Image (cartoon, rainbow, N blue to C red; front, top):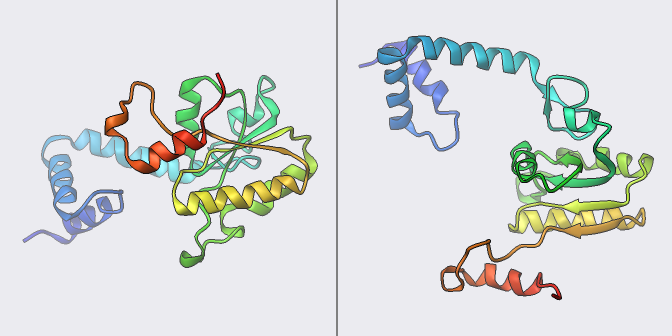
Length: 197
């Protein structure tokens, strides 16, 4: 039998994605048995992040200031906006070094069944940005799920209202991938997204 404090710790660890009861219990015991300094550091970092990390006023990504470093940079092309579902998507794109524009983070995707409409993912703020900013291209980088595709369609219609060029990230065969290991949906997208060489 565990004490109430240990039960609370295990329960708190279960808020993490993919962490079930057993994993949370192992983590809690590990921290208590072997790494109390690490646990205190983790606790302090969590507290500070919760207190000080908010959202960028322009793109909605996580930021400790009113504007994130990307939106505040004069070296970024402010006329190109890449729309992504989450801040982690920005991290992946930035690691590639290929995109030099700015972003807009939806913090989700349209899902009427779950009660998530345009307001819940910040689309009125994006529309205001499209009205006020000289945007030359809206790049849609939502995931290829049913909800992601519905969100992409909504974004496409919104951008067309302002005569803004809309593009979608190509989807299909990964670099180094072999055809025999692809599912039919991925192969279909690869054919649809093919370009002339």
